[in-house]
Image 1 (spheres, rainbow, N blue to C red):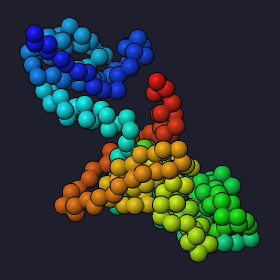
Image 2 (image 1 turned 180 degrees about the vertical axis):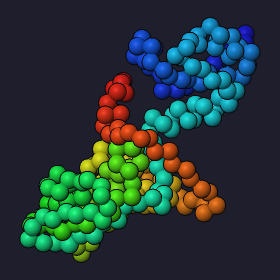
Image 3 (image 1 turned 90 degrees about the vertical axis):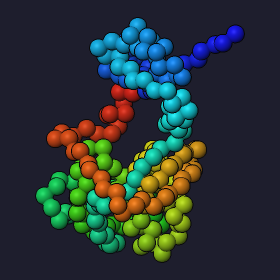
Image 4 (image 1 turned 30 degrees about the vertical axis):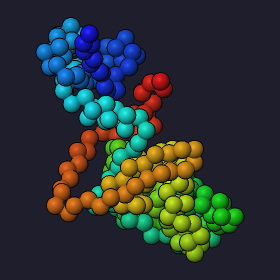
Length: 231
């Protein structure tokens, strides 16, 4: 006998359905007419359903999103100047307000690397040029972390390899999504197992242009991620 199988792929969870939150999934199968019938039965004004006959493509994408992070390094970047000192002094080249005490992420990351290497950082003079908008999901925190550990590593004579720095940056940030591309450049696929990051970087053609949509409000990544269900 013939059995027709269809699959559902997407971020939707039972929590979203119960809460009537806006969400979208993809119904995929070989018979488009069947998929249309399923969408007619199940779709609501908050449960949006797209259809596809590309079963392998949809299920591959679902599998990848569960285990891998994709990120890309753009030419939008911050610039940081730093040098060892007897005191902590933090200034900017623009009017962007940044922490000027030990909570400054660049300083914190630099001091953290010093501690890992068994060294003490007495103080630091930091000048920041902030071209990446903060709290917009564009990786500003990752840029600060990477700037701090790269600068500290250079000042110590480069005791850590690039692989070490990739691992450390992801440990500080909590994930390799943005830190790995910031260090490796290009388009990067990353997976994290324990404290180790496995990543592959491929170059991006200069013929490709990117547009960035920057919202007119701040939304910290940890707050955005906090609304996602844990299971």
